[in-house]
Image (cartoon, rainbow, N blue to C red; front, side):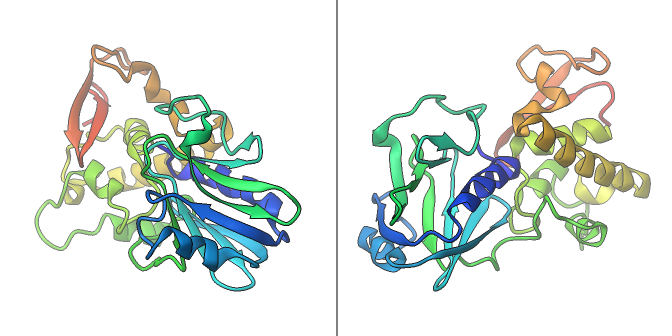
Length: 261
């Protein structure tokens, strides 16, 4: 699914329409699920001019001379500007295009179209999206905010992987990025969040920033070092140890049995 790095690529693509005026909006019933109706999207966006782009976690934002617009990409959503895609293809996506998978979009007076292409129908368009339900942005997080992510008031807290996937705590970390961060930091994802030592917290923050920077340069969340061993029976590309897996936070999680403790 598109994680924060993929949605940042979508946002960068959307920068091309800054200054363009919307002539028409469209949406099917799936993309408009959080709206009163499919026609609400088309009525709301018509005549607006795009003035900027932003993002909070996996939520892409379009600023206009009126209301703020949002797009969420679900499990398989890709942003397209005419024939240009925000990314070449999702790791778990179909890697193909079908016009029937266009769920929503906006057309501009200059003839261009910015559309949401989503086979699994989990992407959404929003008008004045509520950001209060989201934690700090994972790509811009500072150390003080990071310490708050790991702060637990009682007991050991949830498994670290589950904590990182909680979008209300920190927005944008997905399954692959979460596993890569802990792989680099040498931390077992099953560990209770509050059990991390100060040294381990330092290691995780360092791994966090390195993961974001490196994988963004490589081209996406699927380019992590641990991916070589991310399959049943896989071996750790770092030390040759057995890669283990379990469902944590509702997602299939992989970690090394040797260097992640």
